[in-house]
Image (cartoon, rainbow, N blue to C red):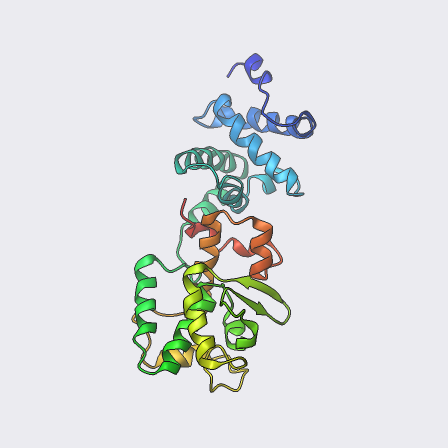
Length: 282
């Protein structure tokens, strides 16, 4: 892009907002354009949106913050949630090249690492079907409703393993649509609609005050879930953190506002979502 056309660029932002970031945005384009395949005309919109997002998030407008791969991933998955997949992929590709140009090989390595599977990998649809069938196939009403409640609290409300073990039926609303969590991360979590029937089955079976998971437990056994699934467990390994990751990914894909998601998840910072972001479908 010629200097006069670059200087003429004006985004659809309030004048004050653009004035606050204009100098930095233009400096990024000047430094990066000679090193990448994209023109300034192609780079300006993507860089401007990212810088504006960074500033309104009260983060420092500095290269190593603005173009950090994790920060870019958060921007793409949250701020651009309403964009279609093709548009988000285009913006991501341009920002990735800018990031790699400004931050070097370290940034390139982080982008690759974001694609690797880890213990926070959400369950895919086929795995969820196996878990659901396993719960229904339990031979006693206690085990069947307990297994259903385990899935409802993990996949339907995103509770941690300790929170699942500590849940009482008195913490569940009568219609099974939400659960109150006590402790350091106290909150009320609405259940995803598809899991409310399983929750009502369990509360109807146990009554007004009992353990939601494993009626015979005494409380405080951190291995309770592992013990339960070690005998006649599903063919897919059942883990509380993968259930929670599945619930988080669902909300990210559904476009749940970030502040609300952090609140109902009992999280203090969006950084806690970074392990899940690579698995969020676009």
